[in-house]
Picture (cartoon, helix red, strand yellow):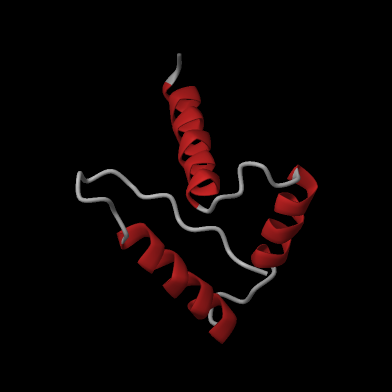
Length: 77
């Protein structure tokens, strides 16, 4: 496997892990893509971007006592 393919595979693995941590493994793919496209439209300097980034930072900091990542509780509607 070339270095580029390894890097691409690792990137996909890490992104998939984010979907798992967010509790979205059973979500419709079109829903996920739509949400990501909306996120991509946010201005990086906007208050909404900062708010969502802060939520994500806190979620990444949350870990189980054994050092493994905890699954993030599913959002309630």
